Image 1 (tube, rainbow, N blue to C red):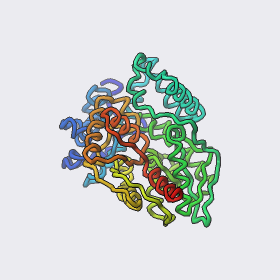
Image 2: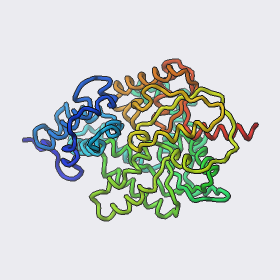
Image 3: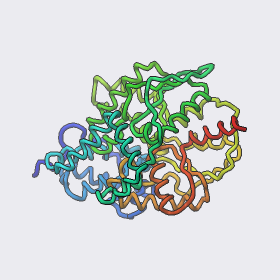
Image 4: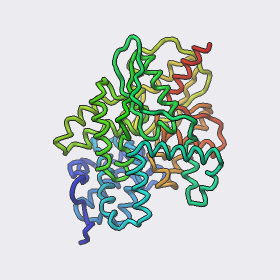
Length: 428
């Protein structure tokens, strides 16, 4: 039997989790890749069977079919939300990917190794370098150099890349006071949001103040680690997590507020990430209990009543890691319903993944494109002129799909739309 025959070492998919699956199949209609392929192995039940087979030594860890299915999975957690047995599927697929990555690493091509090092261990750990990279992308966009991306096999990356704004949001230890203040919120700046969506952070700070919360933006925070964990780099994910735990403990804030659903899901799972670490487990669990999505927070406080109207048809695209992983669905809709004039039109399959899933649209472009097209068709059917969402990856994927389809609609974060409504009242 080869060295890569089964799971070894730390971070193995737990048998106690995959043995919970009763093979009922209720997960299949919820799974985006199953909906597209109608293939058993492309659904959660089939993938759990594959994981179990590797765990029991009946299937090789690096068999092409296993590696392909662990990669094709979006890790969207839709199956978890409908599973009657409570199978923690995300834990299975993320540890399986970690096992695969560990086994593949010695045979990686130098170019693959260099690319992973640059992306995961450089840009996502050094936000000063991320800022420099964003500045270079902005220059390329302004000068038209992005048109050359196809020559380097990066057409899809250029198509999906956000339009980099003229200013960035910097985690600079600022404090925004609310009068009177009902508590202090730590704003998670993240790694991509400050450079691609600084306006969302600024709108978040204003909305928290309107809800009576003071805010702090500590400079010693960083990337949440979600991309690393999804890519099978679980140890790197833990390194990044520790930085955020320590930053929050030092801040003295009451709640850790996140406006990116993917980040929020990862941050709320720190307790699980450090489950086997006696030194960090308690701190990680205490941290995760304080993490809230910004829509949860704003829905729970009494907002300023001075809100203007937005006359628009709006549809809500549910980010997977908000609705499935965090089980937050009603709060964003209730917030949008507060805006006079806004007509919220429910989209068919609102909670089916759009195909973004972190960097999935780069690693699995064919399936991502199919899911993106499916999402855009559902948006078009609503006739909405604004698509509301709560995750940067969803915003980029949906916006790119709408451009490609020639459908004229803007994509905005729920917090941006709320902030626009308050600004409309001030101008009025």
